[in-house]
Length: 336
Image (cartoon, rainbow, N blue to C red; front, side):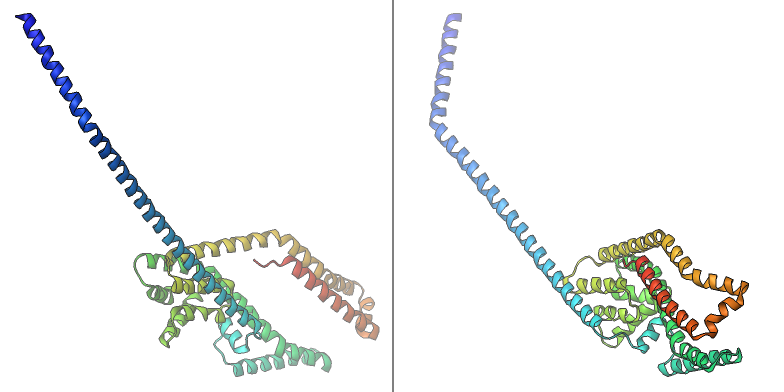
């Protein structure tokens, strides 16, 4: 009985194995075909995905190329405009007075200059100077010193603007990141900023009120603040208006550049201080020696003032001293 059962089980197992082998033989071709079809479908899908990615990357590159070309064209246009402005004559006296922050008219400036020249001329005449010397002092007091004072005030105001301008840019960056538009950010500086940045941004708002857009109003700022940093700011605003982009990031980078330029200027000034001190000492040495010699031996020095040959020697000395001071000044001044 046990042997019969084993035989039957063996037969059943062999039949099942034969059936499975027959089924596998029949279905093998279909299974392989389905596998190849699935593999082919996956490859096609992968190729389509790669094609879409390549097309998207190509589109991004084309967009970046168009934007880069637009920025380059904008920079060329702005550079051309700046070159045209530089090719023109120097700014008029009215513009210089505006740059200096002096709220006086040209007529008032000329009247004050003449009055100052008359005052210093009278003081020289009271002091016993000759008419020729009095005339020279009058010319210097009426024409030379007032213009020097205006230039001094322009440099002082530009320096104050440059010290405060990066802080104003930081306020604009935070305002834009918080959701305010550029116009409101500029208005915020014009109301709560520090002078002279406050006045210059107020002029931007006033220019908008008469019909100018923000890039044009910012480009006009260089007329009242003749600094390359102001030109950088106008270029950033103009490019953002034409090509778009993240304005807060651009202004933040500009603020960093301005601070780095300031650090570089301070470093150059510190490194050149020894040369400047030497130039000051060399320039003052002839006058100090002349004063000491005059105090010890007045008769020895008076011949320079009483004899025509002494006048000629002092004139030649003044010319050579001026040339030497001009050469030393150009050697120790660096443009950054």
